[in-house]
Amino acid sequence: MRRAVGIGALGAAAGLGWALLEAQAYTLRRVTASVLPAVAPDVRVLHISDLHLLPSQRRKVEWLRALGDLQPDLVINTGDNMAHRDSMPAVLEALAPLLKVPGAFVMGSNDYYEPVLRNPARYLRDDPRSPDAPVAPPLPARALGQAFSAAGWADLTNTRAQVEAGGVTFSFVGVDDPHLERDRYPAAGAGDPGRSTAGEPDGGGPVVHVGVTHAPYVRILDAMHADGCSLILAGHTHGGQLCVPGYGALVTNCDLDTGRASGLHGWPGVRPDVDGGASGSSWLHVSAGLGTSPFTPVRFACRPEATLLTLTAAR
Image (cartoon, rainbow, N blue to C red):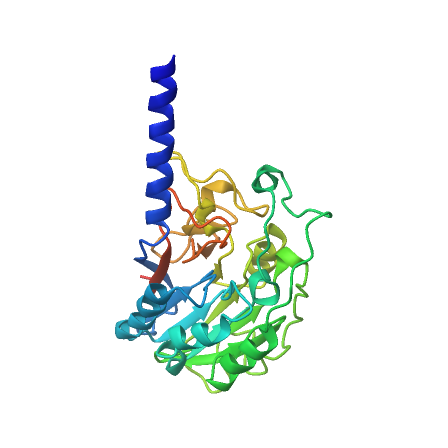
């Protein structure tokens, strides 16, 4: 019995050590989605999310800066950039090369509020939000958003916008963080005067309609699919963060099913076919993100990631 306990303790210690290391094993994923009109050239979209950056995380800063070498056509940031009240300068340093590229962003809860110590067991409930959660100190979300906007990124907070990138017009619809119930789905035409029902901007040329949200709650995904989005981008889930090898995520920290906790899938049904989406579903890409809460700096079977999506024309 004592030997079994010792072996169990050794295994737990080894697992914890690996989880601490895996949280720093930053990985670039590459996927392809056929969402563009037939006349459009391929477009490379870098999707970053959930940096949860601490000022002391120099290795993460340098890894993020190196993503500029990929020379993406477009950058989408789905929020949760900061993990400390002094993180904003480090975030801007890390993203400086990418801020020179056309982009768009939404905010997450850890752009508005500093992480606080919480009971980890709450994530196993159907709704992990807790009415007795501790009050969190505010973060400089407004200043961060102003810096992103000043660099040329489109702020998609409960609005619509257009961005030209890679020879394609991206017609965006975005919402504020649904996890904090700050989402107010924008009416058609709000902030997006150039999008027409014909699927082309007023100036002509190829266009693709994209939805952006931090947390992939079902109500938002359904609204974006009904809005005609060919592609929906989200973060928030951390891919489950602590996953079971061979099974996957146990939780998503929202009402999204665990089978779509990260990666490229279809919404609401199966993944669209490569011949143009015969299933009638939108593409949904959920980033597992690059960070963790500073109070739980571990990942298991779920490496931190950014994703380079190559958008291609339907064949």
